[in-house]
Length: 125
Image (cartoon, helix red, strand yellow):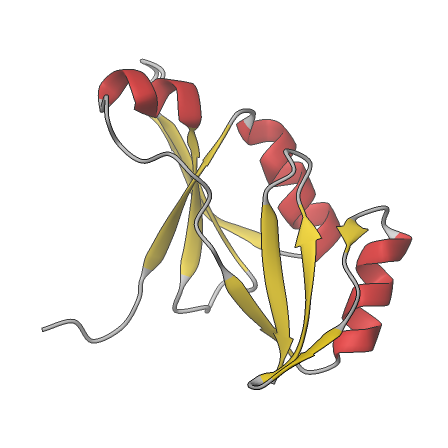
């Protein structure tokens, strides 16, 4: 039986660019980094070191060769923020592409894009 979500795999074209984006623009931290020296490198990032759920950045090209047929599309991720306007403004000031805040039945939401134009959503909680 599943008790919680542990990690989300995010397949990116350039892991170094992705790390820089998540750390500099969203203030995430690197929880772990592994490199087997044979092309397999993964970086675990999260909002904080004690976050229960993290994102693991994988090299899309390497994974495609290792596991042909695997869906390498960007997962639809919803992040939570306690102050939506402040967070959106902060991202915009850091030159992150952000959408307008919209009212949804479940709350106020906006989206943002990383440097590879993968879009993610943020909901006020």
